[in-house]
Length: 175
Length: 135
Image (tube, rainbow over all chains, first blue to last red; front, side, top):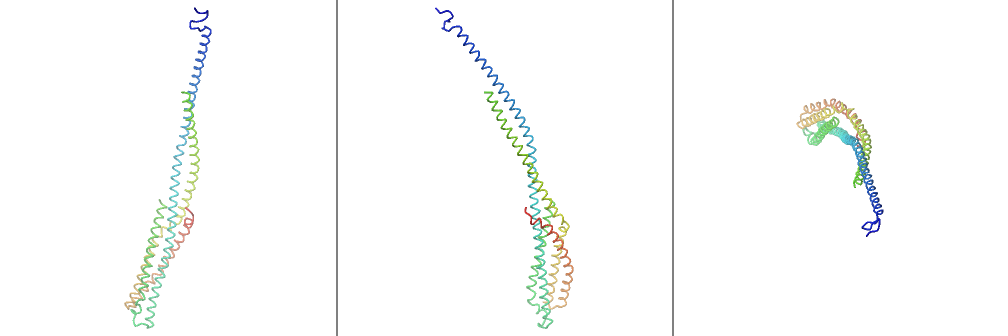
């Protein structure tokens, strides 16, 4: 036999009601928490999507700028290289032209020397220091002519070098 | 769990956004620097080209002038060699003829050398800033 207001398991009716209300409150709190977290998740996802769209816009703005930077870098490198080439060719042209004039001066000197040698031989003949013209020229002209030949060849080589470097300079300027 | 994923996704997106913003700023500053540098390089190249083209006529005439000078020097060599060979052969007439031939080359030689000297001086003067400046 059970006491009045007491269940067979020994729990009273008001206790059962409190537990039921507590469980109901817990259930409600869980539901609300779930909803709140769901809303937070949705909000975060929505905000993330907005941020990602903005990120995409930023990247879309940056890409043409990167392209322009790459193009300008290539142009800069090209201009720098071409300028270096023009300057180098100009320096070579100056050096080769100076060398040409030095070679020319040496050739003129060698030519005048050879003529002097020949004139001295003729002078010796005229002053009757030697019996004939050929003897007067013996040995006198060989060294002078050899030197003149070398100096004349040097002028030709310097002229060819100057011609080549001028052509290279013109190509560098016109490139 | 879903909320944590959402917040993590948001955080990751914000980091990427920040990186994209920094990248854009870097790109803009690089562009400004490159534009300035390219402009400087282009101006410098332009100046170098102008210095060369300012003596374009003299440069164009140089190859023929130098070649003619070498030709004249070879004719001079032949005349001098002829004179000495004539002397060695005891041929005074030939010697005198060769000497006259060489003497006849002198005015042509002097004119050519003077013309070439003017052209070369103009070229060297124009190229002096190119040769002395760095780069």
